[in-house]
Image 1 (spheres, rainbow, N blue to C red):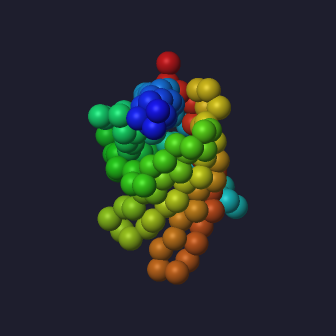
Image 2 (spheres, rainbow, N blue to C red):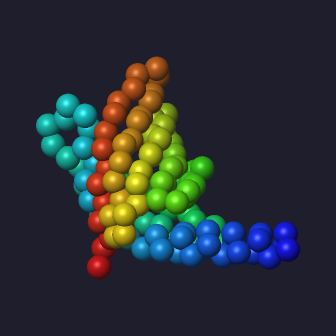
Image 3 (tube, one colour):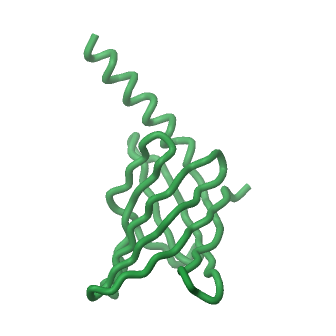
Length: 120
């Protein structure tokens, strides 16, 4: 019975992760910022594990770390070479992903929102 429960749990997680496979495009809006920047995010399931990358376009992508999908809540981090660490706390609703982003570098913080739609 425990093995069956573990397999069912893995299957449900894999199905949820597979639902995110694809490209999502949208906007990254810094709090109190003048304009939104473009955002390009790609999710892929590899060996049953959800992975992802993000950036301003398809050619400039950086890998996510600590990526977790718990129900409709998606969290992950992105650290760029300039020492900026961004923490994402997002909600998945069908073909839309949106939520908050907090960035930190050298003790300074920045808040933003991310809104993505699945590319058809």
